[in-house]
Amino acid sequence: MQIVRAADRRTTTTPNATMTTLASPTLGGADSSLWLVEMPAGIQGPEHSFAGEIIWSITAGSASVRVGEVDHPLEVGDTVILPGVRCASSLQAQQDSAGS
Image (tube, rainbow, N blue to C red; front, side):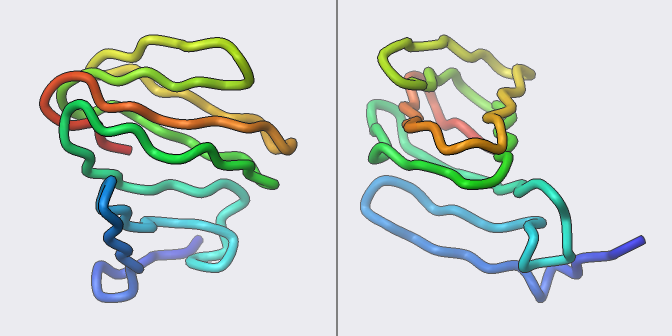
C-alpha cells in the first residue's frame, strides 16, 4: 500500500489548465496516472501521447476527449481510461470545468 500525501502532489499550471498529479508511476509507484485537471470552459488542451494508462474522471461541467479522429462526449461522473499504449488524445472543457 502506498499513501500519497497532499504535500507531495505535483501541480503544473499552463495557459490551458492546472494539472495536479495525485498518483503516477513516479508519485506513489502507481501503475496508472491519476490527475486532477481544472480547465475553464471552451479551452482545449494540446494533443498528447501517453506511454502509460491515464484515467480522467469528470467532476464538474462537461468535456470531450478526442482519441485519434474520434470525439467522445463526457458528462459529470463519466470516467475515461486511455490505454497503456501510445495514442494521441486531447481534452476540451465544454461547460464549467472538467476535472480528472
